[in-house]
Amino acid sequence: MQDARGEVEIGTIDARLRLPACSNIDVELPPTNSATMTAKVACQAPSWTLYVPVRLHAWVDAVVAAANLAPNTKLTTALLTHGRADAFAGIGGLITDPRQVDGKILRIGLMAGAPILSPQLDLPIAVHRGQKVMLTLTDPEMTLKTTATALDDGRVGDTISVENVDSQKTLRATVARDGGVEIKF
Image (cartoon, rainbow, N blue to C red; front, side):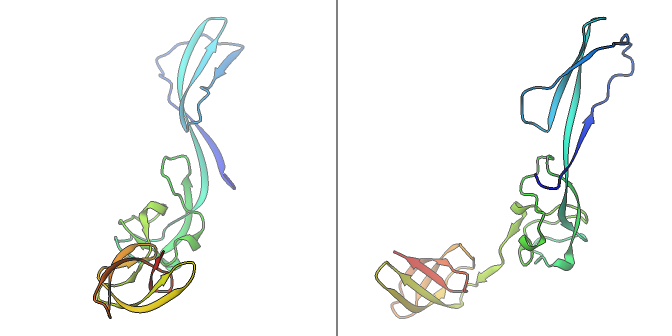
């Protein structure tokens, strides 16, 4: 993880324990790759063993909400800022580059300071139901273009139903980046 600042958080040890001092403490961590684990702390002489919770943090500069944001908000740089987020907090899809967020739609509401996560984002709707779109049919030998009517809303990459204006046939097509739809054979 690039530019992360590591931190180890040691869990609370019961203050009622009265362990004798040890000149040679042995600490063992489990061979797992986890942000939360239990460390075995042991002393040979005098003999005692203690299990202590340990939590690892990897603090990164992440994209966060600059203000409270409602669901279905189209994100712009004015609505975003940078903040500290724990990459080991079990939240997948932490975003560190604001260019990955700009223009996308927020699926859920967020409080100011909350990190923006990729699973929370959608592309904006590129084709609207009832809209006339260019339908491109492509195979290895040729390309055909015709006009169609979108029967569904769709984001880039979505498969939607369209109706060929000339033949009145309903087809399934993929929404393209140019605002049209395409079918590849």
